[in-house]
Structures are given as C-alpha cells and as structure tokens.
Length: 490
Image 1: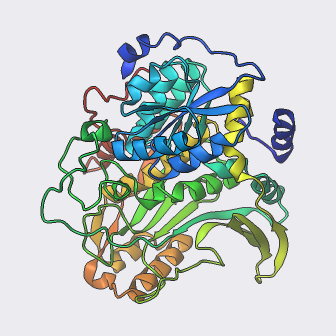
Image 2: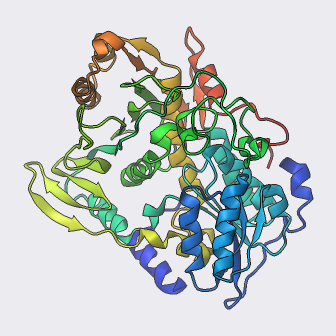
C-alpha cells in the first residue's frame, strides 16, 4: 500500500480541480474507457434507503457528472427516488436487478450503498463489466470478499474507491504526519470508539411478512434466503450476521481505518481477540452492542470499543473517553491526540498543545471522479486495498467474538492480566454496563479467543485442541447462494 502524505494529497487536489460467465457477457470487461476532460461521467447509484441518498446528492453536484441510473430491489424506494428526478426534469433509468444495470453500456461507474452483504459481489460484477466503483464501508461482508474486490479491480484495471471518507480529509493527513514525526513521542496505542446509541430492534414470535414492493430474492442476494425474523427489513439488517457486521463494521470502520492509518500498518493484524456481548435487552439482534476488539499490532496495539447503550439507565447521552464518543484517541509517550472530525493534541496533563481542523471529507466522491478521469489508482485517497484491510480488521474482531464462550469477569481478567491497556478498557466496560443495570457477574460476558493471523495470506493459522483457527477461516468467508456467488477466481 502506498503511503499518501499531506504533500502528495495537496498536490493531487490541485492537479485534479456473477463469476466468469457473467464477466464474459459484458463487452467492456477487458478494456478501460478513457473519458475526455469535458465528457460527462454517467453514474448509477445502487441502494439508497440510507447512504445512497447522500451519494445521489453529492454526485449530482459534481461538475461533469450525471446520475443516469438508479437500482434498488425495493420498488417503492426506487419509484420515490425516480419521482424526485422527474420533478427536476432529469432523465434517469431505473432497475431492480443490478445485473441488468451492468449491461447498460452507457453507465461509466456505479456507486454502491446497498446492504453490506451485497457490497463485494456488486463491486466485482461491476469491475468485470468495465465499470468503475465507489463502494460504501465496510467494503465487504467478510475477509475473503474484500480481497476478491481488490483482485477484480487490478485485473480489470478499474478505479475502485472505498467509502472511508476521512481519507479525503486534509486535516487528518496533517494530524497523522504530526504524530508520526514524533512531536508527542512514540505511539503506544491507537484507540477507536463507537459509542453510539442503538436501541432494541424488538423481538418477533415468528416469520414476518416481507414488504410487497421488495424483491426479496434480489434483496437477499448472496445471503441465505431465510424467513424475515425481525420487525424491520431495512437498516436492522446491520445487527444480524447473515447481512450485517454490527457497529464495529458499520460506524466503527471509519475509526478503525483512522487508527490503522495512524499506526502506519499496511497489512491486517497478526493477532486478534474480542470481549463483548449483546446487553441491556433481549431482541432479535445477534451482533455485539458492547465490545472490545484488540488488533494486536506491534509495537502498538489497536484497541476498539463499541457501546450501544447510553451513559446510564434513563439518559440519552453517551459515555466518552478523553472527550471522544465517536472518534479516535492516539496515545503517545508524551500525550495523545483525540478527535476524528478535527481534534486536539494534548500533553499527559490534558493541556491542549495543538489543534487540527477537519478539511474536506465531503470531497471524497470528487476524489473518486478525479481518479476516474485520470485512470490512476494512485490518485485515490481510499483505494480499495486500504478499504479492504480496514474492513478485514472489523471482521477479525467479530470472528473472535463469534467463536467466544461465556465467561465470568474473573475469567476475563485472568486472560488479560498481563495486558494493562486491555484490562483498563475492560474495567471501564464493566462499569459502563453496571450503570445500565447489567451485572456481568450474573450475565457473564463473551470472551473471544486469541486468533493468530498470517497477514500476508490473510488466513488464520495455528493449531489448538478445539480447531478454532479452522472455524475462524470458515467464518472468514461464507457459503454463497447461486447465482449470487463471489468467485474464487474473479
């Protein structure tokens, strides 16, 4: 992975102002169309019940870009959004099936904001069809998928941007350069925080009706075609494993990426473990709403914390760590940086030393379009490889959690007694839950195993009595449903 410094970032900103069978059906799959400087780039937006609406607005406001098509398996959402275009007298084509969209030779790029389980396959199919790709975070639903997007982008010479928009924040380049230049001493830990309120999604007694306007087969895609076992189809897919990755992979991927960037790590971590659970209510969600994930980089670890419950029962405010509820804290020998959307460097007594401003993460789609025109992946601030590695860290933490066992707090403390940074995080974890009426001495907590990873192959390695590494590698991919298969060979 190439390191982009503040200087390179600024220079670039000034200059710019279905598998093999499916691939063979796309005539543009083996060549890159070179767009003229004055030629409109025609973008299709896929999925817009959430982030996709923002994608539409952003691309519509970039000179020389036209949103030419929309795709969503929910016809109500599709028709509603198409009506907005009609009121503006803007022509737009509509699709419910992304495969039909990709056959359209007049589309240059697609922007993907579908649920997580669709991100990789849409990206790969688009690369095979000769389209460039902007794909939301996390870029994949599992580790295997992310690597396959990278391979497809390189094989078909596509421009593929990950939706980690803080990579387009000039202020973050200044911050990370400052820290890595040693002004606050060596980095001793990178901490990421996603303290974001998530209420119960409810609990149903049986299968729920799928909205009539939704093509559920297309919506489900690569995931198992199972009965809907939650109140809402949309959005709450984040909190079940077949389609989502919990908040560590939803909001947390942004902070995970900034932490890894700060540490200068260009591969996945060599070891991972998780402590967590779903506390405070009994609902149809499966992902952790309170979690500590440890990505055991050397010499400084990345420690990530998720909290979905409030500061205490009866309030709506959230906890914070050194002023941060959603963001990063980079701890150094002589102080720390706390921020994300801008922030401050503090000394060890908490006195502010230097301020960094947020500068331009909203320009992330602009950066993508600039690279589409230049045909240089090096012009991207968040090339797909960066997005894949940071997404994979989230998946690694979740895999440890899913392979964990219920333990008492005493057992957890014994497992981490030689790691004071993790122990301190666990003490705060326990106090937070007590403030919400949850006593883990009674409920227990899921202690995930330490899992060893080969960063080069992105495979879990090692042997143990329970075959945990074999199970971990099984969770690093999935069984795909025909014809929605992420191929081994892209």
